[in-house]
Image (cartoon, protein in one colour):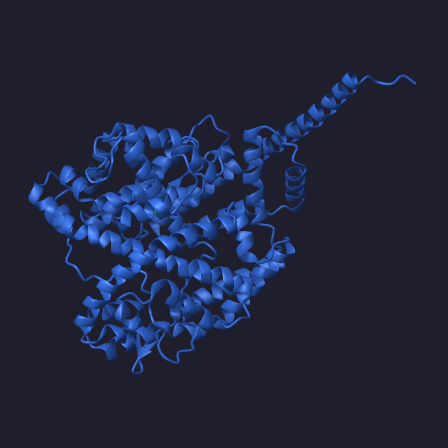
Length: 558
Ligand SMILES: [Zn+2]
């Protein structure tokens, strides 16, 4: 028998190694082509139906949109197709970068939809039940039922501490009404995740969103360390103001003294009325002019959008990419005030991200790198509506007017961001621990975290499921941390643009007005790549480092 030389053995090896992956890659490409051929028209139809429903408010339109969305989700629940994707991913034979990326995206989309129908039905039904209890429950003050708006109003304007306490307690009464069901829901979700091989549902959700708990822990710990001192100082200032306002000592301040039921928003203790500056301007024209000035064209988006109030129409705002081929629309209910200035800048930020995806990229990768990365772009632009220099330049104000705005707007930006960051830490940590062990003493856990992160005291002897009063645990599980990551990325992009793209030492004179290279940078590094790279790789390619909390702290703590 003839022995093969070392060289020819290596060649045989090379041929086998080279051949099998090529066949696997061809097979995967065929799968993707067939899959895209199927879901592309379904996705477009579902998006158009949702758009229609949001515009008309008709229940038959909502039913149709719901049905089409469900059909699309069902296309991702096929167990055989999932098994094929899992095997292909596990074998590690897909070497082509774009193909491997599409495989990851597909695998995650299928993963989220692999819960067996019976269990899924239980989860959906229980979730709907809790949501319904939320929307119909009314807390009571001295036996009188009150709405959430009434509670918020009292927490904003009432100066009597006893009355504030009653309102705060009323806002938490929904907790005991839903807590038992919510714990049951958490256990059902865990059951589904464990069947798919995950420790718990929190881990599954993170994995499907390409997030790793260690990486998130690292980012949140960094944020915690960096904001500890500045938050303590800022909160001490705030506490002095609030204590004086309510005629109590700082030591007597309780959760009901902080205006927002969860202290997630900044109490309005400094005067700032930006609406006066916007009321005789046109926010749509301002947004169009600003974006054109940085080289990003919103005209094609606005031409398809629905911008003004109408009977039956969805009263909020959103952006939607109908077909991943340039049909991008926003829905707004514009008025000429600061809120809608921020909102149209925000929604057009989402819209531009989608509009400028590279149309030559594979269909599956023509979407933002992550839901928080598109939120970051939207926040980055939305923040400008309160930027004194931006307002001055866009609204052609005097230096004196700019000075008046700057005196309070900087303070509010700081308060708003730091208060939200500390609150987001409570949400992230609680949810992580809730899914890790739903049988623990959750009432104590909640207050332990509130005291640790928000520096808000637990009322003596309180043992109620105050955590359960937060609806996000029910309707948007394991998602809240993404709001915070969006803020961090918005600041990281801001820092990079200021230093590296504009070449400035600080952001003191930055309004971005007229800066074409800013639009060009975002287009090249963020919009065009879409989901071609994992979100953290996209961030690293754009800014030179992975996602970090330090620039958020730099921007809002100095
Ligand atoms: Zn948004």
